[in-house]
Image (cartoon, rainbow, N blue to C red):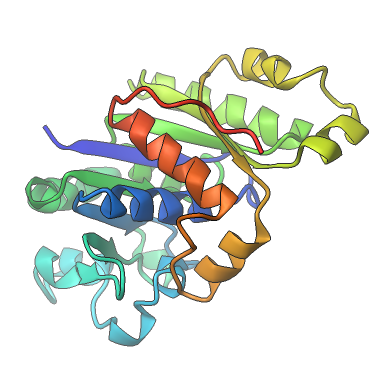
Length: 245
């Protein structure tokens, strides 16, 4: 059975898509074949972040309508060996139903080591479709009460749909800002509130965000990318430390 992971967050702005792209890049850099699936119909953005936009002809909706095969919707990412993208529809009304997405994923999963599904923020119909094929999940939060509450809500929905392997990613962490805000005693308090096992802490790193938003690979030596590489290793069952910068 292939490893199918959904990346979710309760609210927008957590950097969830950057985590999805960075994680896919790290796994591909380690020699894995990785498929990223954009499930944010009407708001798709992974094609920009992966530098694929100019090559796009078909998306998930075209495969569903029979305009192309599922394989026609899978695009190799330039300069990212082993990383591929299945783009979301540009129109929100072309959103794919959960069972249909499950069939699409099943049709291509065997040729990949990992399938990473980037869910829309929140718990709407796009979220329901994104989590349907998943075997496990990463919930991305920032160290803000609204983000953490959203993470709690998403985790509850995931459990309600039968996904028990759920891990917490704390993204855009800045130690000085965290201490100055004084909202939480320490990171352990956030982990206790979400009731999720922590898999990684990604430091605030504008260089990675800028690189990915311009469709380029972030430097593997950048602090955030090193943290994502550690998360990728933990996903693969390897014992590596959590990273806090």
